[in-house]
Length: 358
Image (tube, rainbow, N blue to C red; front, side):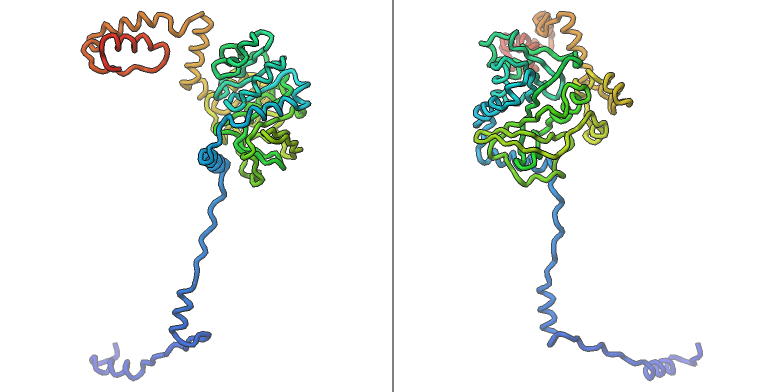
């Protein structure tokens, strides 16, 4: 508004409009030099997040495979070093983890006339092997996974249990600090906490680990240790016995908070002593209701009841297999898929006898 037509407005704008030129660049000889400087600018990438204990374990396991480090390589010599420990000689009850590489340690325990405690895989139970009740000719068999089930007795009375030496395995261990990374899925730290809560072990119980020399590492910071990895007091390798004098504190009992962090599912040992633990701790264990309704718990109870009733896993399954072989679906089938368990062997046999693919 205020103008009769467009012409006066255009004239006003042209006369009054001023153009401000930008100030020249300072600190550069010319634009070319400025462009060159811009091209040389580097961008620093963000630091990668720190590795977790599980990441380090994966790296160590891959390195073992790449270097062809056997699970049993040199561990017979390491077992002899464990046997030479003063703590081993005075011990009456020794707990040893169930892994293959510690088989020589388990054998040394029985040959020395000491009682052997071995956890079942997944901490389903703790089995006690008494060398006085086992023929020495069967010691070699008794220290295998199947032998522990055959010759061992699940521990139910923890009030009378007193473990004098606690032997664990390691994927890596720091010889200076005793900081240790246990095997994948290892629950020895949780087992230690439960036994400490039940007063089957105490602060004076030494923790010994057998390890390969390649598993000694001085770059394991404490923040990489997973919540159930237990520090070692003594390390026995094929070439050395190392006393770490670790200052890393061990658990004084069961830490319920760790169970929540780890999201522990069904563990037979915890279920067996759940009532006592809850009474001692004054709180309910987390996930207890899930354990009670889990498939593992149900199967565990069924197997326990079957054992109490004197039932045999293969009992009457020949008759069941006969029923299967009489099915019209079985008779008309050209290829039959059968489960690999021992109890289903009669069905596999029936399929082969019928000339069918299995």
